[in-house]
Structure formats: C-alpha cells, structure tokens
Image (cartoon, rainbow, N blue to C red; front, side, top):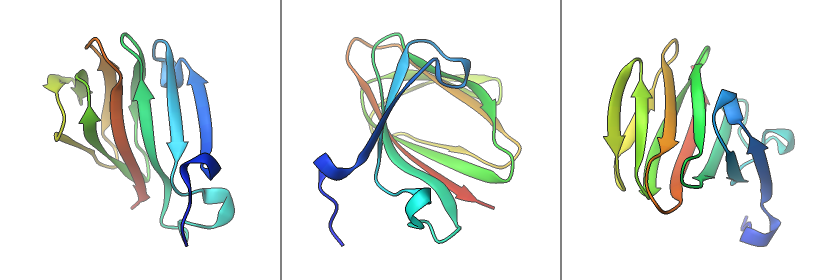
Length: 117
C-alpha cells in the first residue's frame, strides 16, 4: 500500500493537552481504518509553530516515542526540563508524563508514535 501525502488525514488542534498555540498533525496510520491492528493509536508528524506547545500529560496503558525531525524545543520529561534538537529521541513510558514546547524560531517537526503496552 502507498499513501500519498495529499491523501493523509490532517488535523489542527488548538491548545493540545492544555498547551499553547496549535499542533498540526499529519496521520500516517489511522485507528479508524484498522491500520494499527489494535497495537497502537498514533503514528504521525506533529508540527508546532514557534511558541506553540503540547501540554503536560500522562500516558496510561501506552507509551509514546518522539523523534525530533527539525527545529528546537524544550521537553518536560517527568519534571526534568531538557532542550531537544533534530535527531533526539524522547521516550515516555506507561505512567510517565511529558510535554514539549517549540522554543525556536522555525517550526518544530516531530515524528510521534504511540503504542499500547
């Protein structure tokens, strides 16, 4: 199967998880279409404009992995504040909390994957 960019589901979510600004999400796989085989719920590219953020939230029953594709940001990793840049990988396991904010001057692009435990 080949999915072309123009056919991918796109969402724009304001103040995502209590964050600032908005997050643009391009979904590579969709739960509604059974493309996860009940093993996960998100495989997408998230784009945060400068100053935008995803608010602090906890993962329950799943884990999330971010790969920073471009831009710079500040991650709250269970209360630990860390700067991130392209190539960095952030892993948030079941029961852990995280948030991310674009602290740079260009878009922060993140590959995001959420899999069930």
